[in-house]
Length: 325
Image (cartoon, rainbow, N blue to C red; front, side):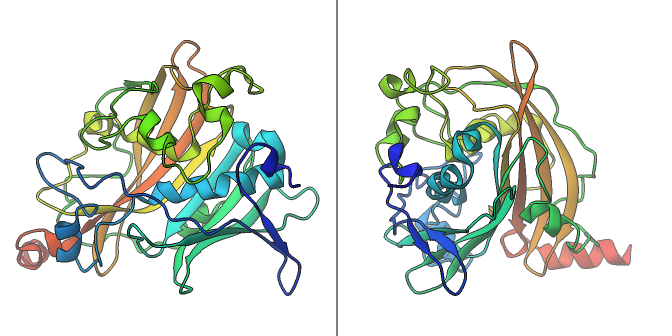
């Protein structure tokens, strides 16, 4: 039996040739954002809205896939993964409910602090590429490398009022309780998520958490994204509207964790990069997560929020006018 199987209802498979890897089981992640409300508008998680920008249907939220990597991280790095683990992911293609997804990670040579990882659909379509690492001094991650080669923004329209170094308007105070509704962006509670999470773990539950190594229930890795985005509107970053956005890249890096259910945290946000591609304008925000009672830094997150150029009214005209002025 694998180390991870002691804590998760997850059967891992090891392959030795030609590339040593650990495979998770095939899972069908659940869609929980169909009713997401973004300032009175729907999002790419809504069936109709997703189809207007060329997606097959309502996209499953990217960090949902992170749960499939937790048993892999635990297998590779032990219980320290829950305290100092990092997943750094570049999203490649969206999934809709019903899609089967498998996560994998390269076998870690003895002493390795980082491995390549990824997820694919049944038909071989890559869902994301990633690195899993262990800290607190994390090696270069997937997104560290990506930031080093992104295309700088030339003539922003949707993000024209933003600049690198801009910080959130205030320090945000957040917590996550079991029955707490997580707002219009995340219209569900932790209890509802745990009912459908792809990799159940007793550490996450009210009863089982008391017997965890930390004596308390911990926030699942994918729900750290929900926790840190719960109050994102308070940052008041000036993204022009209306626009359809999506998560393009995301990293959750634990430094002195885990994060606990019912614990209060302070969030500070900073724009660390602005970039663009043919289809999107992107702002990259790093969020520092501090334990409120001690102000101890326990984690950071990095999120590339991409705004679809085609969804912004008169985008080409505004860009041309700005270039000619």
